[in-house]
Length: 355
Image 1: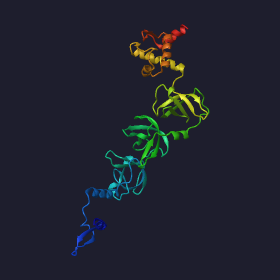
Image 2: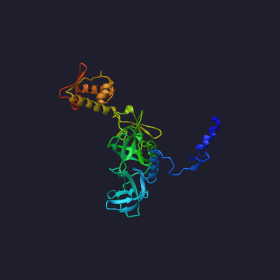
Image 3: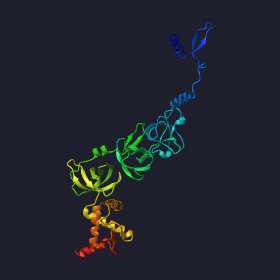
C-alpha cells in the first residue's frame, strides 16, 4: 500500500503549483500567483537585490588604466563617464591631475586610484613604463601584504609579497617588472631574472681584476647576481662577500673569473693586501672605542669574531699579526691591548724604519 502511494505523492509535488480541494474531493492544480506565492527567505531576497545592484556597478578597478570619455566639466575638474548610465557614478579627473586641456566628448587615457575618501578618482599622470618592461624603481611604502613602487603614476603600484626578492624597505631602489594581475590591476614583481638575462651582453672585453659597478637583482642559496652598468651578469658566491648585501643594493664588484659563456664571477671582498689594512684599521677602531683593550685574540672562536668584526677568523689573525709586527698592539693573558699612542700610520712608519 505504501508503494502505491509513493508515485502519487511525487506527482502532487511536481511543478510550481498549489493545491486546493474540489467539491468532488479530488485536487485541482493552478499556477502560483504572485499573491499566493510563499514569502522568500530574507537571505535569498537580499542576494537578488545585490544582483540587481551589481548590474549598474562601475566596472573599472583602482590601480588600472582606462580610456574614458569626458561627460561634463566643473570648476574642480572633469567628470568622466563610468559607463553605468548614472551620472552619480562619473569619475572625477581633478584639475591638478590633468596634464592637458579637456573638452566634453574628449576621450582621455587615465590612471585610476582611490582618493583618501575611498572614491574612485582619475589622473592623467600615467606610468612611465609599459607592461612587460623592467626598470629600477623606488620603494615608497611597505605593508603587511607587500610594498608600493613608484612608476611615475599618480599613486604607487603594488608589489605583492609573493613577487618580492628579499624584503625591500622604503627608499630602496630595486629591479621590477610592470604587469597586469588577474583582477585587471597594474602590479609589479621583482622576478626579473629572465628579462635581465635576455637584456644582458656577454663580457668579451673584461679581464680578471677589473672592477665593475652594478646592482644586485637576486640572492639565492648559492650567492648574489649583479646586473652591471655594461649589461653584464656577475655571480658572487657567498664566500666572496664580506657581509650579506641587500637585493637592489648598488655595489662595486671585482671580477675573479671570466666564463666561456661570457658571464662573470666576482667578489665583493677587497684583495687580500688591501683587506689586511682595512681589517687592521677596524680592529684599531674597536680598541680605541673600548679603552684600548678587548678580550679577543687568535684563540677566539670564529663565530664571535664574525659577530664582532664581520670578518673571518683567518682574516682576523692576519690583521692581528700585522698590528703586532707594526707595534700597534700587544697580547696578554688572552687580551689584546692597544699600546699607548699607537696608530696604524705610526706602526707603518716604525716598520719602514726597522725592516
